[in-house]
Image (cartoon, rainbow, N blue to C red):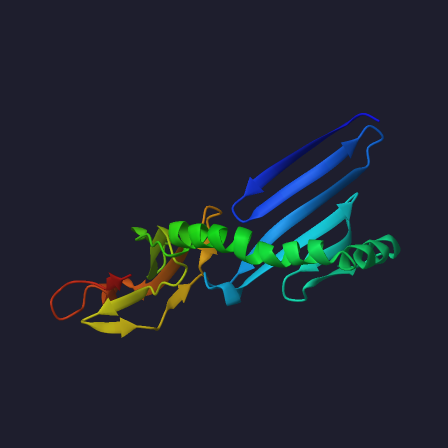
Length: 198
C-alpha cells in the first residue's frame, strides 16, 4: 500500500493524516479551545475522521472518547478501555494546550491596534442633503465606538453605522455615515461643522 504521513500545526491545532493510493483518508485533529489562558477555561479535543466523516472524539471536559458512527463507537469503546492512553489524553490539556494557549493569548489576544481613519464627503447632484462618511480600518480588538459631535454634543439623527466587519487578518473595520443639510452643516456657534470622535 502506497501512502504518506504528515502533520501541520496552526496556532493551537494539529492535523495529522494518512493518505492511501485508493483516495481514502484517515486523519486526526487536535484542538485547544479556550476562553482565557487559565487551565479551567481550556478544553483539549482529539477527533478522528475518515473521508471527512468524524468517527470519534476525545474531549478533556468528558475525559473519554465518544463515537459518532458504528465504527467510531467501537473505536471509542476500545480507546476508553486503555487506561494509560486515557490518562495521557487527559494530560494533553495541561502539557500541550496550556503552553500553546498562553503563547497565543499573549501574542495576539492581549494586543491592540489603533484604527486608521478616513473621512470623506459625498454630495448627491441636485439634492440638499450630503453625506459624511467615516471609515475606520485595521483596529483590534473589535470593540469601538464611532460618534459624530456638533458643539460638543453627540449627533444621533441622520447617523447610520455598519457592524464591526472582520478584515480577515484579526483586524476590523467600521463605517459610519452622517446625513446632513448643507445649510445646517456650517451653522454651529464657532463656524465649524460636525466633529468625529473615534
